[in-house]
Image 1 (cartoon, rainbow, N blue to C red):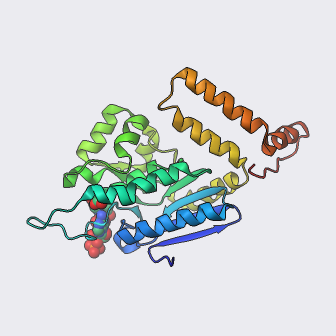
Image 2 (cartoon, protein in one colour):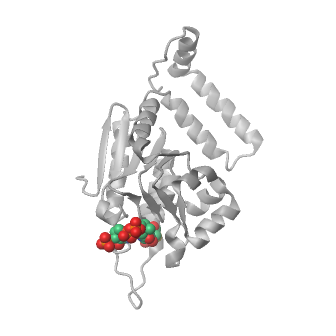
Image 3 (spheres, rainbow, N blue to C red):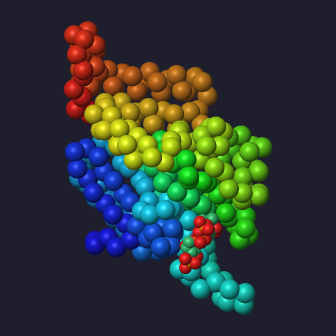
Length: 263
Ligand code: T3D
């Protein structure tokens, strides 16, 4: 499939998806969703990426659903938003969560509505200082989707989740980091270099181990301590048989940098 609304590349262990409708702040259309599904399928088929970057072109990260992509106005025929969620947003969020590699979201500018929650569905969120997060849904009579009602209370607690979701106010990237909503906020002039450094580190890391960390941390939301300890035991058993564990230990003992293969 030709991509017109996103950019996709995969080289040297680093895959990059850039939302690419800068004049509309990279808001989602049905076409963009189809292209994203295609890119994620390609990424899985290629099987070479050890980290995925998700970012936006231009001054925004993503302004959520393109509100002009469907004709909605008082008196118009109702639109089945549930169908849109089922077909587009739900598979996107679940697809990112299921990827066997870390997903870095580089929030280069405003992230609103489903754009904000798409970022929160990623494993590491790094934002430029000038970026902001807006749960814009309440302004148009909707509920935070794309996992917003799941991620927000877990990341920042009920009081802040409620405030963000009910008021739809802009949260600066600095506050988002201070609240624990995201991993890090960096000055705009250091943003690109910080993202590149992060990607280069992750592309050389023990990928199978990182994928297992991601699965275990996500699983902890539904597990008892006993279940989680059992999961850690089984995961450690599997990883202990892997090449990267042996390489990591050998490199430490030989006082040299490790050379991980991701397996
Ligand atoms: O529908 C379903 O499938 C259900 C799922 C829903 C998921 C959702 O995401 S619902 C929430 C949708 N998003 C919003 O409500 C956010 C709307 N946008 C804004 O509130 C503001 O644009 C921002 C706060 C994000 C940024 O403000 P600002 O002042 O920096 O930029 P701007 O001037 O508002 O936007 C620049 C252009 O992008 C502008 O177009 P123009 O005037 O230059 O021709 C604006 O209309 C356009 N734009 C921004 N966001 C959207 C958009 N066009 C369509 N849809 C958008 N979401």
